[in-house]
Length: 161
Image (cartoon, rainbow, N blue to C red; front, side):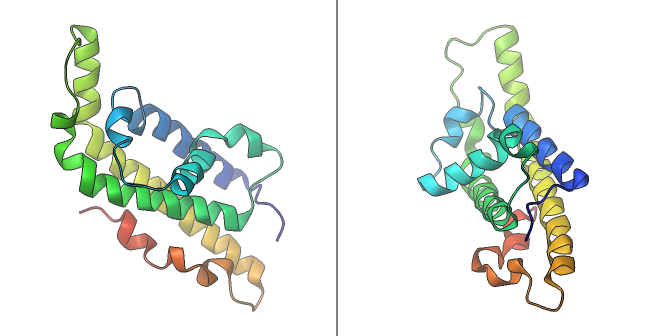
């Protein structure tokens, strides 16, 4: 299959990337995220989706790679909801924070669960759009997403509690 260059999908990937960097893995929350029990491959896939958009903007994305990146990001969302979100406030110490820094850190912590939900929703939207594209391109064959076991429970991993 040709690399994915669909404008709607590209914009959605850009949105995911911006949202992740600004609201999920920002300077206040990142120290807690680094405590997650995710393997290096998963982190690399998340980074490829959220940090390397410009690298793929013109050449396009390979569908199977995008699916792997979504699966890794879904794994991240699931682990973060279970391991980090419930105790985030206690994991981040306020040592040295005062004034504006403390206000920004508190805002990041207070909005984290909502921002994680927005991230999960954006990922699911991307998955659905890619699956539609995949089905259309399959032309009677089995779409790629049906051949990838890591996508089997994507809805469960991204669903809000």
